[in-house]
Image (cartoon, rainbow, N blue to C red; front, side, top):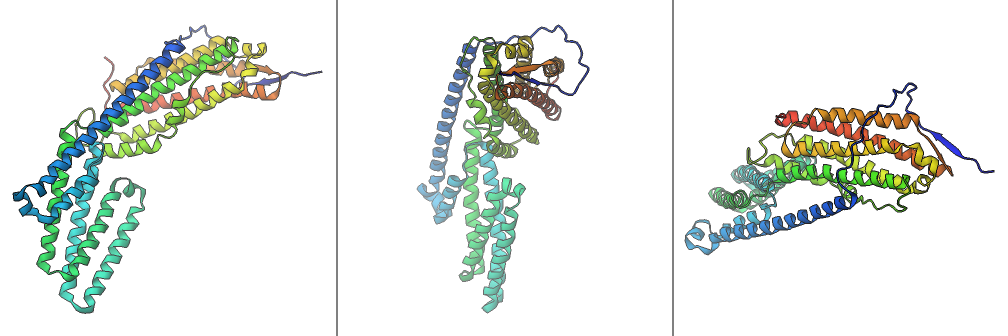
Length: 434
């Protein structure tokens, strides 16, 4: 005789407040319209990215034409001569996609060139004054000492993140200057260093002027827009997931159609966020929406929480698909109240969209977000403390139980996300509600 396995879910609380008669917040968009809207957003995002790539390519071409005038115009060529190639090399290696990346790389190259060239000239002059065997010993020792120390500093994460290129240029410039100074007169060494530094500055100025004055592309804007858009993507994914649950529980559909591709893409966004935050720190003060010393670290923290929420959403979707059989059984469909699940799902979606609007418009979170969070917590606690799930076998029952617990994790992660956004509003000076 077959037996029915029963799993009781409890959160450790014996006394549960009676359920309040709360009205569920209905989903704002029908499933089909929601997916069409999401596809439209993806289309326009792709078009904007393609347009930015074209603009960047044109700007690089303009910079190369301008710096090539050092070769093409005789008066300029007479001033710089063959050293004009250093200006062209500077444009090629320095011009990056965003203004912050170009500025950061250019400053790194300039500082590395000045320090490396200056110390290299000093070492070369001292070596020439010593002469004989001491000349070679001093040059070899200086190359070893400065090369070792600079390479050691490159291994520090904080230095590697922002100044790795500058340290590398320092090593390169120091070695070129100090070694070339072995067979060059003292005055000639300083002259070569001065001319090369001048041409590098020319290339850097051309890069910065073109990058900042011709349709500037800001890394800070890209990071901000990327983080903001993830709220909407996760809200759509969670909405689709809860809609599929309702369909399963009410036996209206047998196959899941929810898409979690966006959640998968969010899991790989950490390195991109860190790079954009680093570039954003280099961008000029008050270039647009953001000022200098803007709390970009808080954006990285919000991005981390969003990735964790995306991972839980993926697990929630997988649990939903694996528990399809269990949800077709009548006792199970009655175990998690339909009204409670709709209230929890719609409350989470509403909160995420409110947080998105708060960050997009740079205004502080509304007070009733906390009220919605409290309502959602009460609903999930009620479901966990009162649900008893029956299924044909243990695997089905485990899938349904996991779905409820994962839903609880989603609520906790949304609560953490709300706190992070509120802290960002305080640090960044978001305007209060009017």
